[in-house]
Length: 222
Image (cartoon, rainbow, N blue to C red):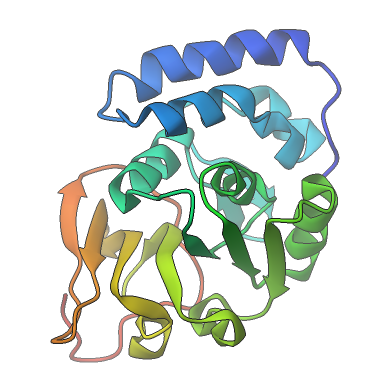
């Protein structure tokens, strides 16, 4: 179970250092995202025993073969998605709820999908009944079709393949931002769903946590 950390003084300084040294120096240039990540306490969405590394430029282990994305990877994905205050967002990989909390400050509504029951429960608890966020427990690759179509989809981790049925939950003209992994190489990518189809285009080589359920079908290539 994820428990909220209690030491806020040191975390404030670490959060400021994360924004100054990781985000501002690495193409996170949307002032809304910078302001929200400076404000939202990432440590509150992590297990207490790893909260001390909440703001390091590294993935944070959550147990059960899952980890929270590094702050920079998440920030770059959010920046690439060009989220507006009226957007409905589908988040794949809620983990402990941090990215959902950030998105709730940027968009109108957030539907956050999490396959791990313990993480889903922890995310709901950490989000504290945030009216803009709905946490859906189920396979990540299935998304949340009941709330479709969405303006934006954020996949907060790396996948080998995005199923067509998941992409179809995004509106035509909507944006998808995701980590991708190909032969062990991790990148960040984004694309727009059009009438004619969909493709992701890499925009950064950045470490990203691997998400379960997105193995590449045989003979598939990006």
